[in-house]
Structures are given as structure tokens and as C-alpha cells.
Image (cartoon, rainbow, N blue to C red; front, side):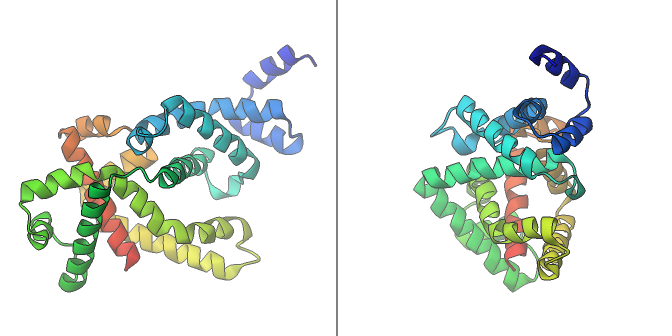
Amino acid sequence: MSNAALKTSYADMSVETLFDEYRRNPSDELKWEIVMRYSGVVRNIALQIQGVYCTFAQLDDIINEGLITLAKAVDKYDPSIGRFETYVAKRIRGMIIDLARQQDWVPRPVRRRAKEIERANAELYSELGRFPTEHEVAERLGISDDEYMDTIASTSMYSVVSLEETLEGYEQISDTGETMSASMPEASLERRELLGALTDAIGSLRENEQIVLSLYYQQDMKMKDIAEILGVSHARASQIHTRALQKLKVMMSQ
């Protein structure tokens, strides 16, 4: 069959059929047909967290890296673990965050203040037996409520990376549990416990925090669009997002 005929044939196939065919007869043509079907996912995520890499990389560079990550994911994907979109979105975000870590992209004052907020949250969480209010954290830090909210907005992208670092130690357990649960029951059990703890932590968040996380991570929406849905400013949506991530980090660390 000619290349033109192959492309026409692939274009008529569903993604599920393409994956089935790829598993039976792997080829670069089939792999990149699948990759290009999901290229929009790469672009959406790259745009969504542009604040993480805008100081050291261009959008096109990140998209190209994302396509390479996507191609590798096609080979490793197991349909039994869930939807491919969810699987690959996690890996693309991880790739971008890894690049950000390598570049040490967060300005020192922002990093220092973010860590101070994290420490205050953790201390108050232990003392109060609940997550502290924004006013309580501001009071612990010796700053006004307005100063605290401005800081929350400015550290939004740092909080994304920081939570990833907290969960990083469990990532290998998660991947192992996905692919080797039968041969490594301990890893599978730890993965279930981790997911259970994360589910409980998310369930304890305020409704607007859960909505922001769902729209941001499951729907891959940009913060400005989430702000419109919630009827709040872009800065307020970022604050809600950061606050939710801080809570998750404290609870998962505990």
C-alpha cells in the first residue's frame, strides 16, 4: 500500500483502532498518526502552564518536547490504566516541570516567601488540627491579609512545582503499581493508599477549590477561563488554585 493510501486509511480509523493496530504491527507511521491526534493536548498544557517556563523557553520549544514525550508515551501506554489523555497529560506536565527544576526558574524572593507560607501552613495545621484560614496564616507571617493574598497569587506556578516535588517520591510507586501490581503487591497497596489519601485530601477542600482543580487538571483549562466560569478575577482564581495546592501539600506531607 502506498504512503498516501496508508495515510488515508489511518485517517478513517478511531484512536482505539489505531492503538490496537499499533500493538499488533508497530510502525513509525502509526505512532506519529496517534501522536498528531493528541498534539492539541500538548499545546493546551503548554499554554496552560506557560508561567513555569516563559523565562527560559519558547512555546514552540515546549510543544516539540511535548510531542517527543507523547511519542514515548504511545509505546508505554497500557489501556488498563485508564484514558490515554489522562496518562499523557501527567507526563507532559512532568516534562515541563522537570525542565523548570533544571533551570531553577523561580526568583529567590518568591521561593523564599513561598516556603515561608508552606511552613506557616504546616505549623498551624499541626497546632489547630485543621487547615488555617488565610487570615491566620497572614497573622503568623506578620503581614496584612492583602499582602498575603498578593503573595499567594505571585507564587501560583511555584506551588504547582512544589506539590509535584512532594508527590515525586510516590510516582515510581504509582507507575510500578500500574504495570506490576500482580508481581509487586506491596507497591500496588502503597499506590492505593496514596490515591486514597489524595482523594480524601481533595474531598476536604472547599467547593470552589475542587472546581478549580478539576477544571485546571482534568479539563486542561487556562486560569483566565476558569476565572470567567467562577465569576472572579484572574488573580482570585490563581489564589484559589494556589491555596488548594498548599492544602494538598500540607495534608499529603502529613
